[in-house]
Image (tube, rainbow, N blue to C red):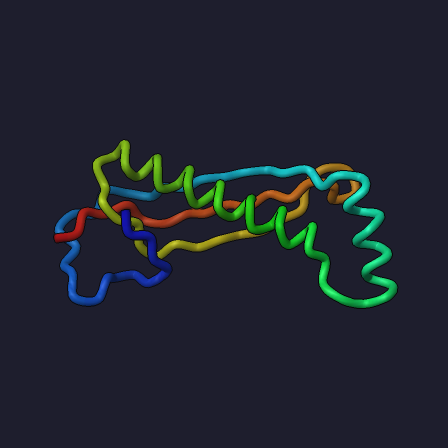
Length: 106
């Protein structure tokens, strides 16, 4: 299935708009990652553990959106938008939402 952030697919014609689809995931940050990320903030550099969690959350949200679109008969999702938010007490959890329009393309 084609997933794109653009509203159209170059060289393809959208023959049917099916509707809005989304996928969500919430992932908790683990205590030890928080400690090491804090140390990393002090000494500088990237936090590989947080980057990995963020990537996993994004992939899960996009996968769930794709599966929902497939059950609706779509073969593509256009206009995809990714949103990131922290939730929970003290922002201890990360929520990622992927949304777009399920379509059928030629």
